[in-house]
Amino acid sequence: MKKLTSAVGIALASLAAGFVVAPGVANAHPHHPPRPLRECATPSVDRLQQWIASGEGATEPATGSLLVPVRGKHRYAAKVNFLNPEWHVVVVWLANQFEAQVDLSRSAGFWLTYSATEDVYLQLRPASHWSGGDKWLTLVPATGGRTVTRFFSFRPDRWTTLPELGAPAYSFASALAEARGFVFVGKTENRLVFRGLRFDGYVPPCL
Image 1 (cartoon, rainbow, N blue to C red):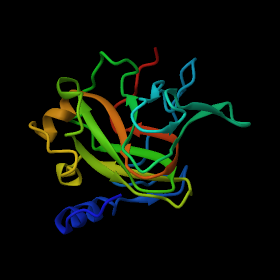
Image 2 (image 1 turned 45 degrees about the horizontal axis):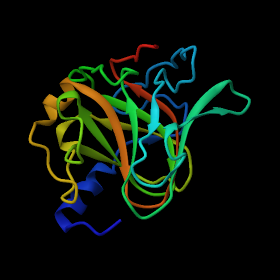
Image 3 (image 1 turned 120 degrees about the vertical axis):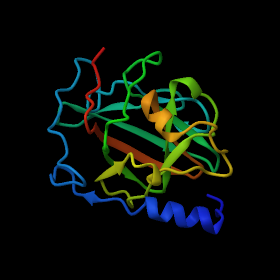
C-alpha cells in the first residue's frame, strides 16, 4: 500500500498496538472473551452468516459467500484472497441481513480471530451512510499467516480515517449506534482467513 503521511502512519501504528492472544486463550483485554457461541443451522462464523465478496477489486472468490467448511471440526471459516494491488472490499452484515442495524454504543469492542499475510483495514459502516469509502476504520495488522485472536476497542481514539478514502461527515458515536456492517478493505495482495468474530454485549441473531 502507498506510504501514508507521517501523522497517519503514527496513528495507525498506535491502532496496531492492540492486545493479541493465541486462539482460545481467555483473559483478553479489557474483558474475558465471550464463551463460544452456538452456531446457526446454516453456515456461520460466531453466528454471522453473511461474509460476502462484493465484487469490488479482484478477489478469490470473486463474489458471493466466503464461508467454507473447516475440515474435521464441523465448523466454518471465512476465506478470501486479494489478488491485485487495487482496493478490495468484503462485507460482514452484523445482523445477518442488509436492512438490519445494531446499536453497539454500549459495547467495549470485539474479538477477531484471523490470519492475514498483509495489513487490512476494517470499516464500520452505519445504515444511514452505507455507501462510499469515507468511513471510520481501524487497522487489522498482518499476522504473517498465523492465526491470532485480537481485541479491537470501540474507543474513538482507536479509529481513524485514510486520506485516500476520505473522512466521514458523521461522528464515530453515531456510526456505532446504527452499525449495519463491517467492511474489510485493502489495497495489497493478501490471504485472509476469519475464524471468529465475537462482540462484547452483542450476539447476532440466526436467520
